[in-house]
View 1: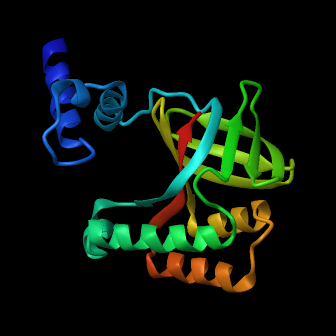
View 2 (view 1 turned 135 degrees about the vertical axis):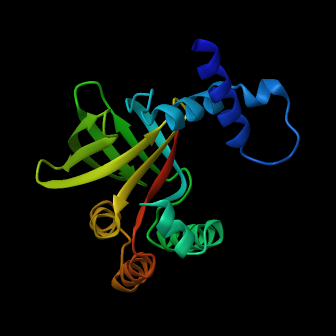
Length: 198
């Protein structure tokens, strides 16, 4: 049985390799790829949210494979991601300019540039969902896809708009409307951030 699981993980690591160029076995069996494969097979994350995570780009996830196919697959996801990156940059959310620090005492700090907002969080590993409460008042639920090096923090589109308005000091109505219309045009998607662990 253990041998069968090992081969499943190895095949998943090969299929989930970041690019299709020839890679060494060492690259395929690195910790990040193994974690992704284990997460894909078991449906559960093995990593912890705790630590400081820095923004690396937008993240998009379709709520079902059927929606992904209807939307034109990876091409639509790529186009939506590029548009979201562009709009987030307009409100000051750029690579290296935003971070989240999740502490062991269930508190967190979100920073964009010089602006900092504190809150509390709870994480349910079985559902991979987190409940974030900003300033003890504003609750937001997020889906978490996490390995030891990367984390996607994903929100329903209307909740992402609320978060951007809250944490960004540069948000303006036209940019928020653009992000809102982007989210509406890709109904059935979760939008958010790809974060890298510091």
